[in-house]
Length: 247
Image (cartoon, rainbow, N blue to C red):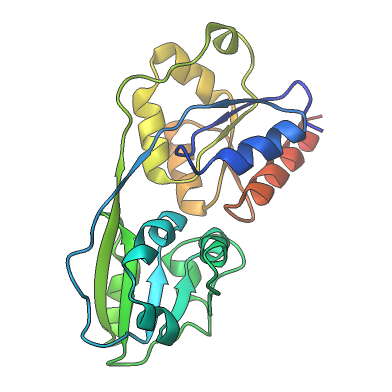
């Protein structure tokens, strides 16, 4: 399906292996160059005196880094929500089911659009997230008079150095670049030298949200493709569908 197709994957180490395997099994030549490093953080103490009604996970990293800090009674009594299918899959990998998670996309607006995600005024919601980031979900919940606490459980960091692309790759056509976050995209562009940047922008970018796609298009990528989800299968399916359109 993807024979003679060169693909650059930029996901962090430890989070790309399933995708790399899926793409290679489909016949692609894959280069993995992480543009984000995930640095664990310890949340600053208990968020509430008693279990919240909801624990909301903002990303798969929030699940992996946040669950070790979550008291057992909170896991048992709070409803778990995920901002997208990839985050819900990360919860499932830890033996927890998301009570609410969008089937596609991944972000605050996707979760807020879910009818079953309906924290009531004065209920308690714990947001488990990375350091920094948008405040869309927090603002929307507080506007409903929901009590919101936040745990920052990881920091996204740009890797040291420039984008290391083998010469034989730079002198061949790159078919696809896979980027799954705005931070990863910004780091990718910042790490690429002039020659590598021109090479990258000629590829078709595959991503996981309209927001990343808009930033990519503004940066010069032509018609970025938004996959149906952030998991390896959804990204691989998006690459295959785009490849078939090109032939």
